[in-house]
Image (cartoon, rainbow, N blue to C red; front, side, top):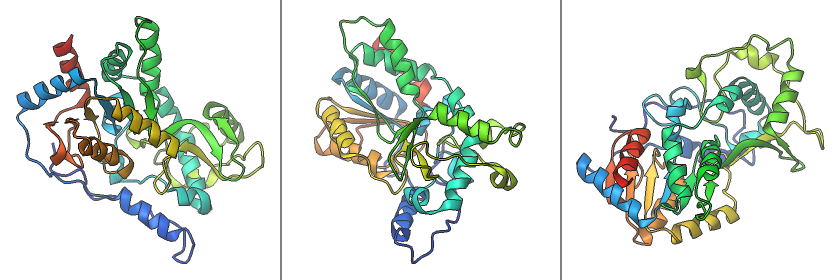
Length: 334
């Protein structure tokens, strides 16, 4: 357990020049990446916190999940003690658009790291949330994760559930890694199909490119040697031929679509409380949901190993791992 979510944060240089029109926006995005989250509220008694969050589950809460939700599936977080920001940082939207070298480096890393992300499976915590959702115990789920694990778990739970109850929505706040989009013409392609094209383009060059799990980043890319980056061959948009491609994920420096914001607000309005799971809420798009819940005077519970932005606004704060907490809560309410 740490007193801060940030140890020294790695900051890889961009090739965007200071006179580039996108430089200021890129720098603003970098400040968001590097945001430090400190303790702002005292530790709470475990029994008080856990029992209190159990009571919030009786109010049909909205669940807001972050990277700490997926660590038990083998996907690292950003700001935890072993988080990926210690040694690398995510791309910004401005780099995808304007920095050819950074974009090429990202896709080389994603080419190697994607299969590890694709192989990740939902854990017990995902299954419990999906079961609650299928049974109508929660209003729905907003996840900041782009790994699709909540959605996969929910599909299975819905198949097993009583069809008289409709599960609440699962909204991926920052989009999904399942599709690729062209930043020039807007055409989209399934990530698996795109991966096949990458493998064909790099056949014979990357056959022995293997890395260990600790080198994987939360966005599905990985830390690889520079000479692999240089050898990597990028493919192009099937529609217009551009290589300005990115996952359909809201990156730092990009705006969450207005329609998605509206759907999240409706979910929050229809919930009786907010429970944050495994997130420092360092990014404003997630933190704003907590602020809206507080403004609406809804009780807030937080389950996270480290500090969480806005924790001083929470009624209950339980410093523990997400999977263990969910298993305990599921027993309590069953």
